[in-house]
Image (tube, rainbow, N blue to C red; front, side, top):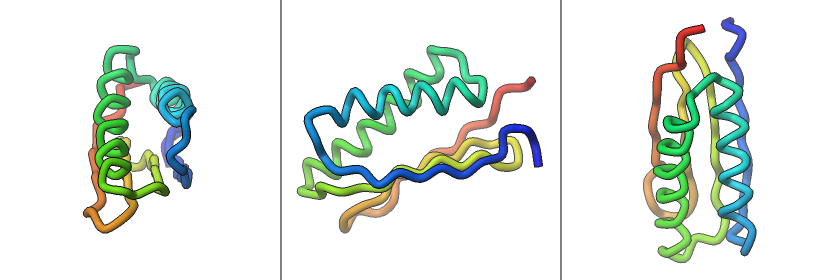
Length: 94
C-alpha cells in the first residue's frame, strides 16, 4: 500500500452551500495526494459538472467517492437514474 492509498465517500444533498463545500473538499483531497492547484481546479470543475447534471435531472442526493489505489486517483459521482460518472488520474510522483 502506498502512502496515499485511501477510500473516501460522501453522500450529499443539493443545498445552497453545496458548490462551496465541494470546492473545499476537492481542494483538500486533491492537495492531499499532491496535485498542483491548476490540476486540482480542473478536476474539481469536471466533478462539479457531473453533480450539476444530476441536480438538473432532478436528483437531489448523490454520492461522491474518491479512491486512491495503485498510483491512480479515481473519482466517482453516482446518483439517480444516470450512469455513474467516473474519472481516473495518475497520482503525481513523490
